[in-house]
Length: 116
Image 1 (spheres, rainbow, N blue to C red):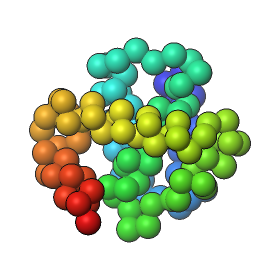
Image 2: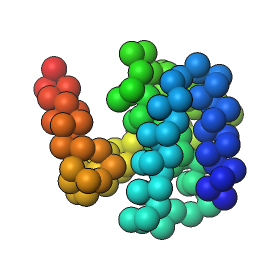
Image 3: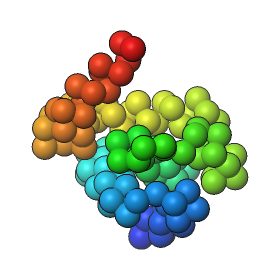
């Protein structure tokens, strides 16, 4: 299942013309999240989208907009579901610390961005 998801994420990356590093970072987030928590089949693609979106926000100058991300999954998920999964992925990174999904520097940037 993971291989199929990463292949689909690669197609999404190509569609949005994202950097290769974004895909690698998303796969890293995916692996770390899957090692920490079980995910049902129905939410597996949602998790992949959230990991790619978080990675794009970190790596890209212009990350894909929410609506475009949802369209890539043929609107199977709502905006609320994607943002909730994004928060879950970020929280998992915060709990894991510097060696986790997101380093402390990124967590600092995320927290600082909330205050703007």
